[in-house]
Length: 446
Image 1 (cartoon, rainbow, N blue to C red):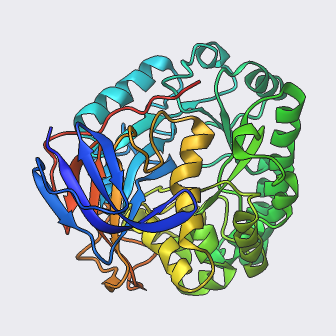
Image 2 (tube, rainbow, N blue to C red):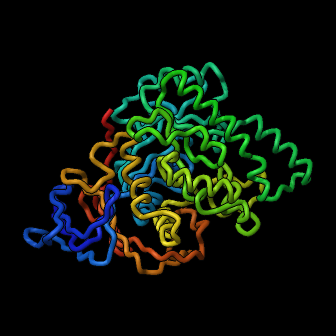
Image 3 (cartoon, helix red, strand yellow):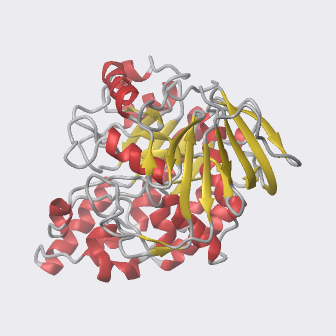
């Protein structure tokens, strides 16, 4: 395997930034230097002067749509877009066709990824009302988590049986990750707005239908179950101010029983955006008020929220342009999530150290991923170089998602990803990809 020298970079890592150089060899970070550059016995030298060097982003929630829904996206196309966006590892959700609710189907997704994924990968095992026998056999070193839909989303994986929920929380051998929205509240709200608008519901009603109340009722139940059974709970895509009351910031991440994830779209958009770009930002849970967004931002800063992810969930333009009731929820995000977060750094909302902590370090700590998420000697060389002074406008011509659109279309960002290194290989460089070697399965120290 080739050796790569990255010289004169501004390294952002573990709450600090400093000028330094890194030697990558045999897939690992061999050496970090603060006072010299590496030039001997290397196959490639990257002069990173003026650029930021960070650990590769680890996205703990994506829907890459394979198998069965590959007209929307697939592991190859979406991992390629992710790599261009600085994401070096992802964790994919089980609501595919067939659903990933058995260990046999889980193994099949691993096989597909081993041949197709440009990034490193892991897959959630999905929970249903009657597959506890599969959940109990999950290997903690190989399975990132158990996904529980505690409110229906895409697919039909709603776990609404109280005994089944109890059994999942009581017996799961790995982290339980939940989508929390109360189904009865959503049904009641949908019926109401259907009558008000004679079935022609505007997209601006989405956060009223999939309301803050619906989110809190479900999240609160998940927290109660986790505390009752001492279950390691990770609540996905939190979207409301009220849910912040369920989380704690007085415990180190490594010791937290209950952790929370926030997604980029909930930090960037608010309900004021529905009138202009409604279908583009129809996600579940819904993007809510500016007050909710500010509470999420504050929750991230004060460590109530632990991880920033994407909930990348592509649909075709034809599907998304349907009227509200038949427009599927979800959108593509992996190519632009990091630069969107860095744009918020430019605006003074976050620090770049916080972005690296929440997108790189924290997912590795939370899921106990072996030797990833940090720039440390002996760790896998998953690295990203960023030019902080190059304008990047999102257009149809540079979107890599298979669905061909983005909620950020025509947005201009002030940062650009220039290089992505995965397992010591330069996979992406200034728009060009090396697809000769694929990513590897993540391993967990549990």
